[in-house]
Length: 296
Image (cartoon, rainbow, N blue to C red; front, side):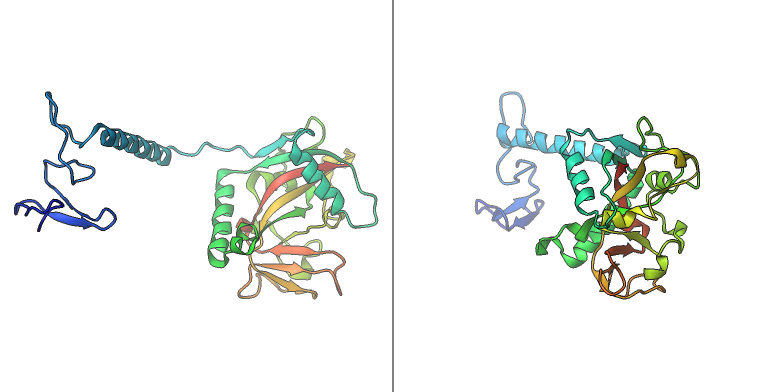
């Protein structure tokens, strides 16, 4: 075997060919430990591991990055406390979400005034589970290549029961009432084990119902109960939904416990049986709450 300069290597030195560099790289102890082709730099004091100061600097930078990456992998993620954080009205997100609420209110009832918008902070485990599922849809279907969001992610409304004053002026702490669906969704995200057949589940079976129509998610789904009856406000969740491939239908499918084979969600389209759309998913990690909208 010959080295890069054409000389035959001693029998105790092995060589491997690097096609990217177009040279044979050896384990010769006299060569640079990075490039394996040039001799180690030697000054009046010592023989260095590298062929030049530039090569040594690059190696030191690479080592620093590797150490930092190893540290990041070994450091546990900070614990995220579930809750809500108010978004100032000067924030662009406030107007964006308020506008979506107003423009998607399609019932004849007067459009309520949005009084506050809160960002929902979910647990690290809930966020991770959602991202893993969304990525799995993207890997399978390549939605981005078709100009869609990753995993065909949609922003959809969901109304639920509130048994506390969460979201009312001065009330940002989650309650501990096990019957307060709103606080439980924010604290634990959505959980299919708690999904029943109430309020229209007979339309598309046992699933988590969302809609692009805010007024659709308002009544009778968004409602105050117990201590919240005295409130003059209502609170609705805006969620991220990894819809994947949706099964579109104009007809009710009340026996569904999952989408048909080959599909990831069910889309009830307005037409013969529905006046307004519904997007239904049948697994907990396909949805995560993003914002809480408080209105009159």
